[in-house]
Image (cartoon, rainbow, N blue to C red; front, top):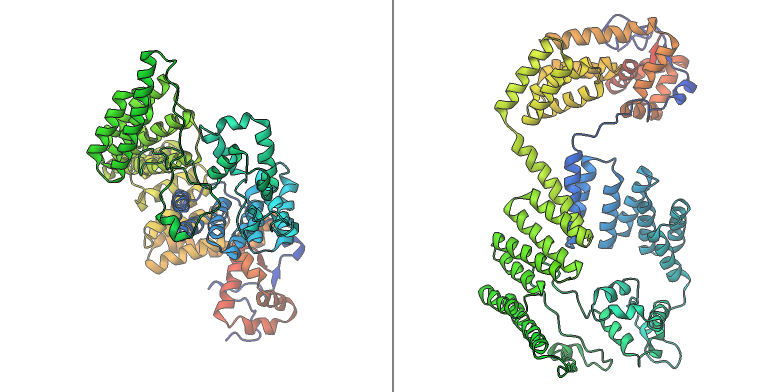
Length: 632
């Protein structure tokens, strides 16, 4: 126990007695310090690449509907780099899709806290509150976002939907109008914002967009779905209704199977039970036969060949779905012979080769498809699909550079978010693969020796260059990073030096030289309290290490006696560095520690009692070492 007459802070650092009174820097001075910006480092953390990879994996899982895996990967990204607001935003979206509004709201709040200038943070928050049926709060969240981003479409749409659900009348059928669209509880408006895109992508309905009367009806249906009963006699509206309810899908969307068009669904409202529906077969609408009598024999034959080619394609699609790949290829070849101007047949052949893992043949067919498509003015979307499939084939072959090039070609033809995401994932994969291919321990050792030679000759810049090359060749070599840290100190890049030495310790926690170097760097950065811990950590591994012993002796002398020779401005600078440490901030925010520090001036006996607790004693030592608390 410390005797009452002994100063409470005596022998804190196992050195000669400190002054008899602990003096805390004036509170006003501490408040004037800016711990956030005082020692900010504009250096990307070493684990930023890992975080981006986790985010990419989360995006992939989210797209495939695996919400649990998406949330897990976004969580890993946050653990790797908790300062990136995008990771919280993405996880909020995943939680919301999973139906977990509370966690979605929590992540949305984190997104806004990290980056208040990110518009999606407010739309995420509004959507989460909307899902929790907290309508007033949701409106407030959207309004807060619109105050900063008045033109943001997502925020505008979100607030409209909340107000509609909050203030709008219940969606029931109008009196005397029978069962309209609004009479189906919980059914979304099929004439929503996505309908225009569906109409535009369907070759048959695309011309309807130029019909002013038709567009006026669509706008009315978007406002009031119940008005459908007034338009049942309009065949265009009924056709578009079938499209909105799932008919008329896009042709050849992915690599799971070649392009094929499903049979149109019946729009009859007098359907039977669900069991009966399953047994019923789709009814093919009767198509009017095209009048070929006015065509020349050559033109008539061309039309007939095109029709026959489509029949071969449909047969090929059925064979493909049955995994009869050779027969499917024969059917597509027959279609190509009949109509060599249609790139879809070639694209379908490429899909067969892709699923058969014949990637060279797939690439060849994709290139032919693009040539035919360009020569015959095929839609940009179809040409983009051929490039995208070609990119996937190159990826399977391991040629990521060519795969990325094909993705870029696809984006030039027709921009797709899915292709953009795939390309970003490929770029990350390629970056990782290129780095791994660059690893070579022998060449790393050669670069290290060249760096050592430059260091001995005091050519610091050249030494840094060679050590950095050695790190690229052997990123898990702790001694090389230790040497790089030493060279960076010589060019006054203390932040870079500290980053590399911390990585060296992470690679080899028992590397005593790295602990000594870390302490030296922290002294140069005026972080004496951290240097003290680093030297002690090194001595804990090797008690006889001379560098750690000498470093500990010097830093304790600086802590105990250096303050007496400092000007007030120097003391404030030292305190600023201390306050930049989150651990120091945490200690000072502890009400118990605040009381103990006050007792040193007002009630020394109580301070003496508190100092008998090893935990309290260690915290006071840290405050003194940091310069936030001075003795005198």
